[in-house]
Image (cartoon, rainbow, N blue to C red; front, top):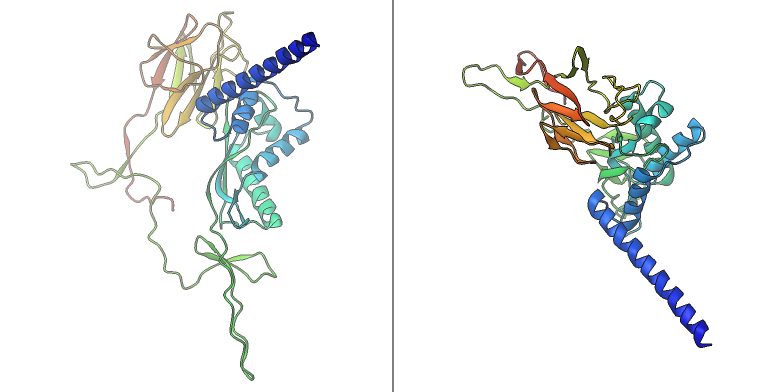
Length: 334
């Protein structure tokens, strides 16, 4: 009897120790990935560490839709609000399966349309416009599409105010409608269409670019993001601006490598918020920029004249068309 009790106690201690280790690991992952919950930390860890069998392209598309449609805000009253902006990440290998042309803008527009349709069917408060941004994250494993990250939400519906009874001989007053925000209102409950409020004064439009007036010239100018080129001996390749570019022994690399010390997916380069950045993808022999080691999952800036080394293979960084452009006669996007 004593032996059985001792065995049960040992097994219980092992289970408790395992649970504690898992919780500590998830807390560390939550801190590293900046997720809000332990569940999100577990999902992010799996997305980066485990390859998920995708099956057909239709299966992958359904995962893409679920990553969007599961995101909304729940108010204390129980009302659900749709987000105005969502960002969904996909692995580089999955982009072509979701869109054969690799068009991120078109994929985002399709995602926004599906999200709005789902929100309206579910009875969520929906803003006038929803934007979905699709990002290629080389750290993700193929088949994993983590839940989208939302920002901003529709305003809650205002409760309908009771109306006074209509006196005999008078026409009833126009039906009141719930306000959704963003200067739009819902039509009466018989329809889902939205219309602009006619008597709302127009707000001053703000341009989406920052204008700089030089001291010796009254014409506004705008900074230009230069093209980025990688130089290796006689090879010179321009890095695309639209997607995250993988460099290494993969056939998609703009610079070709035959050296075995260079990993298949060694590093990634992207254009982010007006500057070029590089990140090591957990390569076997590491990546350096101007002699300083680049940590995995950390983006570092690139500029003209820098030297990048993949293991012991050297690449030169070259940027062109630096400076400013005159904006005379142009108007900013509204």
